[in-house]
Amino acid sequence: MQTKPKYIIVFLVITFITSLTSNASLYAQDDKFVVVLDAGHGGKDPGRPTKNGYKEKHIALKVVLEIGKQLEKNPDFKVIYTRKTDVFLELRERSAIANKADADLFISVHCNAHHTQAYGTETYVLGAKNSERNMAVAKAENEVIFLEDNYEENYAGFDPSSPESGIALDVEQEFYVEQSVILARKVEDNFGGKLKRKSRGIKQLSLWVLHNTYMPSVLIETGFITNKNEGAYLNSKTGQTKIATAIKDAIIDYKEELDQNVGNHIRVEGTETTTEEENEPKIYENITFKVQIAASFKELEAKSYNFKGLRDISRQKEGNIYKYFSGKTSDYNKIEELQSVAKSNGYSDAFIVAFKGNEKTDLAEVLKSQPKLKSTSN
Image (cartoon, rainbow, N blue to C red; front, top):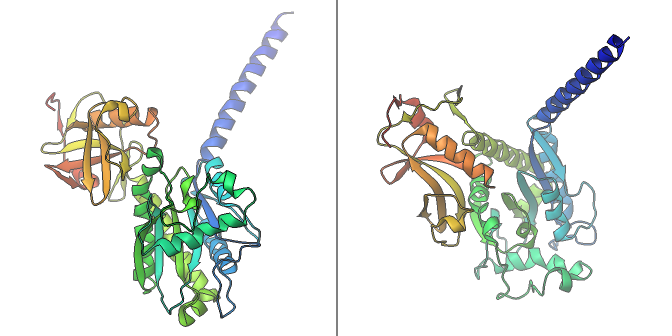
């Protein structure tokens, strides 16, 4: 008589395990690259005033919807919109949407304006200070704050009209600046290369819409709606589709480049090499591997206490950016272990870089060569 209850218990256990397996499979399938698309302005905030009747809020929304439409065809991506209709959103709400989604990228789309017939594209990343040349753009994009209720309380006395008013950046935010610059460069290269438009380059601004996002973030000025020819282009279906396609291609290129340096998978000429649990040293002679954990405009002391206790910290300056690394070894298996340690300590975007002497070299090219096995040298 006790056999039946035993069968019932076994059945329930198997059912429970099966449900766990199914849920794990479901979560794995939902592991997508999340992109938050932000159409600038909206509702009572039309954006830059023009004499030709074009409205920035409408153009930005149409471009964003087209980017999303194209990206959503790719199963690797999940698209989230800050707005899909003509509604007003506070700047803080836009970044909150991205943070809540734990997004991989935040992209804000706008149009530029000027009293002259200036033209061309610009892509902005977050910066602590505004140059005199860029102050007008920062002022125009930040002044939407005045349309918000309780803006004095919400923005801690920040005055968008004041050149002296800057945004203090957390070190954690600055870690994303380098990745933001990589995406910005791809966007501007596509505008200038594929579309043959004038690129005015990548610039830094203290923009509140980017300030509270904790992921790589850019603000794209797709062109000047105040320019007679460019304004017509921006307002056209053809122009909007081409602009959206250029941005979408940049996003995909960015993800593909990121994939080559994330986790334990390195792509080499169409093949994928996966590092299993191999304790035997894998030495690449004359090569030094490091784990890049951060990039910042601030010069921090290369000490463990500044980087969550990680050891063997080094620093290198490239242009205006300081890059910070953990570890130093010629053993690729060892550097993968150090990358895992960095990720477990909160540096989720940590990736491996290779140096030959003092010069950075292509990691994929290094891994094409044969390592020296069964060696304990370092």
